[in-house]
Image (cartoon, rainbow, N blue to C red; front, side):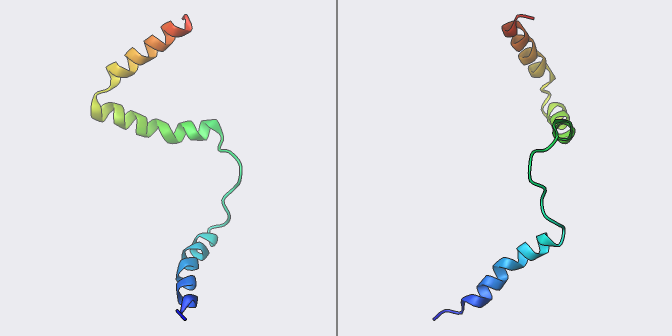
Amino acid sequence: MADTATRTMIRTRGRKAYASFGDRPSGRRHPLVATAMVLPLAALLVVAFGGWEAVVTQASSVGVMLGR
């Protein structure tokens, strides 16, 4: 038979390392925290790809669709 105990120990080693940081909280992230995480990346993408005009165009078309 194959030696499966060694492979099992190798697989669970990563889980034990993660467990030392504590359990992940279950539930949902607060919307402000999610926004704070996303905005820097969004700003970087807008600057990197020059997409400010596209963002303004999309926002205005959504506003028109909503009747504002």
